Image (cartoon, rainbow, N blue to C red; front, side):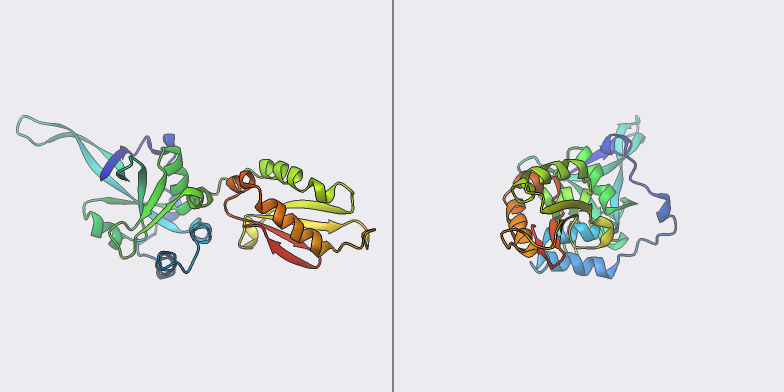
Length: 248
């Protein structure tokens, strides 16, 4: 079921239009469509795809909504609205499209409005939607919801993540031999949003422990903390001078 929401009020005033797309022809990026197909086939995790879609141009659908008719039954007053869909549970998903062809396949009369994937996700969340439905009429439909939607929105509260990581890793760092530094990994194309860098303060631990052992233990402690992963759904990695471990 489709519904329309005022373009001026979507995302509590957040604008979807970006001047950077002034020369955009609306053609779909074939790499983006391959990515969506790979997610649908189970070959690519939804969280990984969400990270990749943050900087991808998507199109939202804007349609004319009739407010009033004149005495002859014609259009007297109307406004433009962004379209979303509502499922049988009453959950709303904002529509997004990879190109003007997939938009036209859904509604030839809809007007495309370009925006980066992260901005579409942020607008959807701000407006109370629980998902983004990409290319609802094909060529390949993809629903981004749950942690993947949060990851796509790219709203990382790094200080909050750092505080929780400090508590979680305290059993490993309290003796002062290893220090855990938290780094925003999003500019690094590291496959995760946050990296915990473990650094030894001396050459060797009194009990012979290796830094790689500490890194593995740290990854386990972080993996056991769903509250941390809710704040950093794009993933957390753990690195040491001798190797790396993933915590999700």
